[in-house]
View 1 (cartoon, one colour):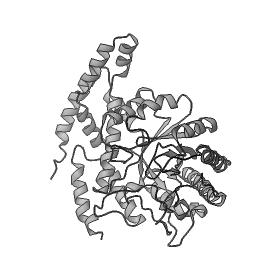
View 2 (cartoon, helix red, strand yellow):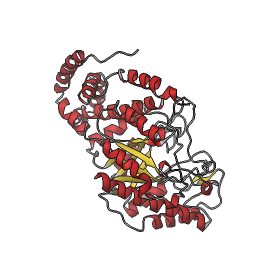
View 3 (spheres, rainbow, N blue to C red):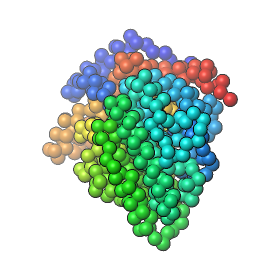
View 4 (cartoon, rainbow, N blue to C red):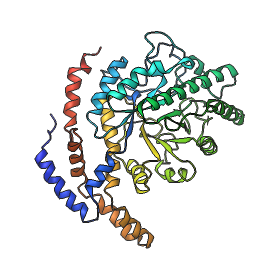
Length: 425
């Protein structure tokens, strides 16, 4: 259905592209080697529409949801892993997998979230080892009866707050154990849905309570070689349009004061804001950050990532400033209206393409123009670079990484849908 790979043509096109970039002082071989060292953390919730597999009453509590009913979603942990492996086979490079606590394997027993232990994720660790993946982790502070009124760590009820504190503590311990087992630190990210739908009288008290809860969650240190703590801000969401307790300012202050990673989600700010502009500012004050790369359409709708101007700007900020060792790149979109493996592959490949475009940019030349005040030449050069044969480098990189180049990967998705997904009820 879709064009198959023509390796001879790809080789020829790449040779011409390599020469074109060399004229600007860019070594495409070095760029591709560097790209292969940058992992992207794929999010488990794209594969099953943010459902999770815990044995519990998840009918209340809201938080996040996917829209659409495309057939073939993963119904079990085994199916989710199978689908993730298929997606990863279409994505060049070696990457990570991001889990929520609600994806625990409890053997059919109900285990409350504050009682989760490493044993409930041992299967995920074994799978990650077998597939050469790192793991990242998140407490699941939504879709639960104790989150039904929209508050968790900032709840007025001390007992409910304590429940979520204990859940986050358990999640940090699990994240640390994952990192130790895999030899790569787990980023354990705390996000809560707390806030008010309409105008609150007291914004201060819930934020005081949230700060106290976070202090309790992080009271016991973890080994940074095994676990990195992150906190995630948000401007607003459904049901909390007027006030989000964990705002950007709140978590920025908390991260700086307590040496935590700040998570910047591309959909969590005003529609006219972009996270690319925030990266260099935030990294002046915190050691590392976590990115949740998504695509908001008019609001925080978490559409599948595409190769947009903002995605390119995010990658440029990381690469131009050599931030790749201080920025943890995770994806956060969930579209249930299209083939889910295709969504994973489209979004992740777009993120990697953006990084490659940044890596084959003659940044030193552009910086020299800027420092000399030659802004006209800088602008003209940025425009000329857009027509260089990046696609030929990308296809060559895919072939060398053993994944389908161009649109050839869509044939694999179509075959997988026919052989596997269509047979799921």
